[in-house]
Image (cartoon, rainbow, N blue to C red; front, side, top):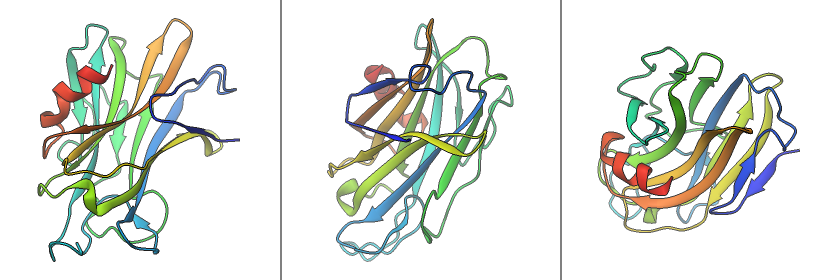
Length: 199
């Protein structure tokens, strides 16, 4: 059974019954502000306030134990240097239910120096999260397609990015923390310092 995390809460994936995780994915979804219709989290959508489109992007920042950035995976680089992380690609329509951008991680192939995976969301065109309701990040065990946990971001604001969640490698196995911390930037590289600060 999936566990809903509160902002700032950490879950031990080993103790949650997810022992021996090998492959996971982080899926993200959203509701447009003021709409009862569920749509995808990322991509183009009609902005009620500005009359334009919003292009939201999911990314992951890989850091070592010293919190030095080793790699990033985003719509502009769909695969990590070591081949362990794969982004399904940029969603430019925002249509449909469920996950709209998905990032797959093979934990068995991950760079041995990797200690943190920080999952971020940013608005490439600089529009804000005042136009987004209920951003959701959910971690799924690819073996059996079992949702382990999820985090729903309730807050809105004038920021253009959010540090959604992170995975941390510990001596007791992997842990997921829900962050929901506002950030400023239009690309994953812009969010790196904010990502480091939340760890």
